[in-house]
Length: 117
Image (cartoon, rainbow, N blue to C red; front, side, top):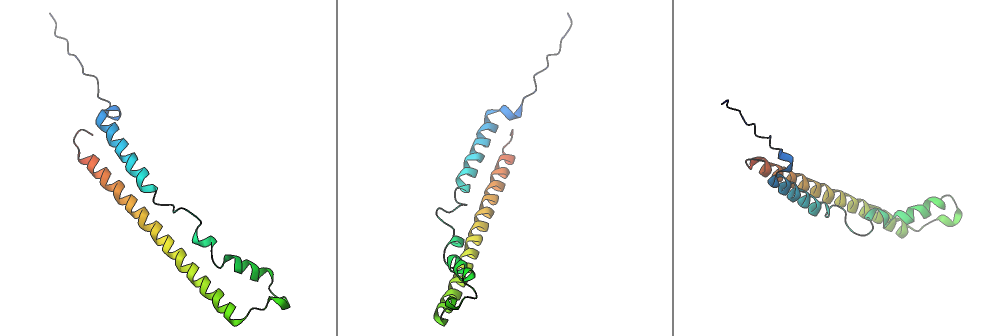
């Protein structure tokens, strides 16, 4: 009688239950965190001084296009406030993206630390 070696089939790691669970958890975390990236409603960039600037550019050079010093100060203040709001929106977006990146790195580290994944 001759001994025959039985080869075990190679385990496909991409279809193991623990890998599928880990991938599902990763996707769920990614979806939850990306919901915070885009704020609802119109952007600050579309509000404030934009319509004033369009009006001033359209009527530039006309005699009736003169504005008072108070209007000029208000326009300048609006532009400054919109610029500050846009900078704050960008900072919030950067912070959220950094948080997402950190979460992905943590989840990746945890998945890497689990034996058999």
